[in-house]
Length: 299
Image (cartoon, rainbow, N blue to C red; front, side):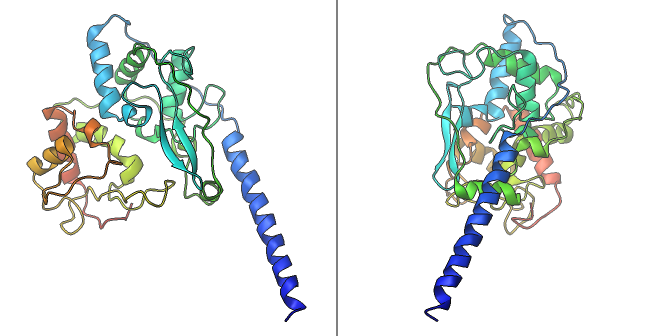
């Protein structure tokens, strides 16, 4: 055993080094590659169009842009975990430290709809799969609003990726938006808000990043292990919203309080979603109630 044990430990060390090296280079390849896409051309409204600016501001909140980039859009730390890696949402204003100060409309659309930087590299935590449904009017209003926000001088530390984050990226547990979205999908017209069911589905796209495409929640891929699982938004009576009323749903988003009196975890950006108007709330609720019942975690 004394002769065999060092050999076994040596073999194990070699395996760890080989696997670790493979994971490192594969994760670097995924993050460092360049993806060329045809970016749809859209026309921005006038920077003096007050209605467009108001609509853009509303969208920036209810689509949770401020949840990651901060209330002043000057950037915030989203994940600070040495194993996953530090992830910082960048400064979206025109101040010092901005990453978008000289962005063109095409650059904005590439980042928002495709999850790619100006140079075509995948953005690490940009949930573009939630924004590909946004129509040209809403997208233009959002961009013209973000270009109008007051400058904030704030340097964002560079985002990184830790050893666990690299493993998750390689095995598919952490998925880059650039690998998820359909880069050839055209920009579709948004449903009419009078169609509550269709418009609710349009709004619910923002929920899919955490709650999953089927909105049944469960553990959120690619985040630190101490983050709580996303709730089940389907009408399942045991683990979902099956026993909730529309009033319960509105109260939860407005105040962060569930029907049983418990509070939503701050990871859930209810403060942003709670600013939806009454029509948007009703549309979103109408859509969620129409979903097929699923047990929690069956994303």
